[in-house]
Length: 393
Image 1: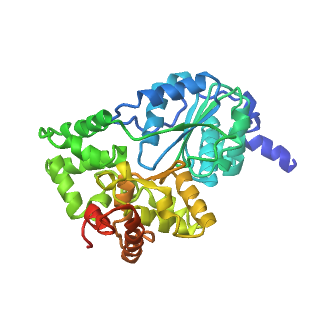
Image 2: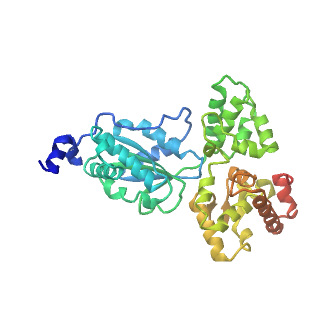
Image 3: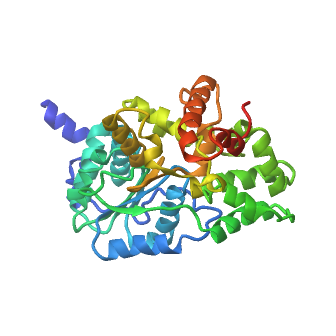
C-alpha cells in the first residue's frame, strides 16, 4: 500500500472536497457583542445600507480614532445580519491578522478537518469559498493599509460585501467606497453620556452639555467620562471637568472597568503616531499644533491658519507631515486651515512618562515653538498660549 492510499484511508473524505461544493452551516457568524449604548448615527447607518444596495462591494468607514467607527460597524452588522450568510468579523490591523481571520473562517467552514490544514491552507480555502459563493459579509476592523485588503475587491465582485473600519482617510479610491465618520451631534453626545451615567441610578445631570462640548463630542471620550463618573461614586459632570483641568494626565489615561488602556483618550492615538515614525516631523508638528488656542483667541474650533506653520521647516517636509497627519485622521485640512480636535490637542500636550511621543521634554519644546509662532497671530503674543492652555506645570 503506497503513502497516497494510506492517506486516503486515514483522512476524512471532506478534506478532499472543493471549497466551491461546501455549504456554510446555518447561522455561521462571529460578531462582537452588540453595543450596549448606541445613539444617533441614523445617517451613517442609512449611508452604509444605501451604498451596498446601490452596488458598492467594499465600504470603508474612516475617521479619527475614538470617533466610533467600530461601534457603528457592529451596530449596522447586527441590524442587517439576516441579510448575509455567513457574517465574519476579522481583525484587519495587519496582513497577518487578516490571514488568521480568514483561516478561522476556513476552519469553521470545514470544522471536521480543520486541524489537518495549515493556517495558510485554511486561509486559501476560505478565499476560494468566498470566490465561489454569494451573499456573505466580511467586516474588517481597524485596517491600517489598503493594500492588505485589496485582494478582496476581486473576490467580492457580485458575490459578497466587505465593510471596513479604518483611521486612514486616504488611499481608498481604487479599493473601497469611503464613508467618513464624524463626531457625534451635540444631542447624541449628551444622550450617550446621560444613558451611561443614569443607568446606574445617577440623577445629577447638570453640566453634561458643557462637558460634552469640552470633549468635542468624541464618542470614546464621552463614554470614558460617563463611565468614570459612575465608578467614582456618582462624580458629576462639572466635577469631572474640574478634575480634567487639575490632573489631565490622570483623566486622559484612566481606563474604566473592562476597557484596556489602548481604548482610552490617552492610548487610542499612540498606534497612529507609531506608524508615522517614518515621517519624524509629523509628531513634532502635531505637538506644536496641540498648543494653539481655540475660539476665544481667534481660532474657532481650533482652526489654525496653514500659514501659521509655514516657517517651521522647508515646504516639502511640511507638506508631507501635514499630509501624513491628515491621512491618519489626526488632523483635518483644507486650503486655508488645519483643524485639530480639542481632545487630540489635550492629550498630545499632556506629558506621559511611558509614551515615546509625549515626554516632558518633547511637550515643553513644542510649547516653546508654538509660543513663537503664535506671536504673529494675536495682539497678546505668546502669552495667549499660556492663558488658553494653563500655566506651565
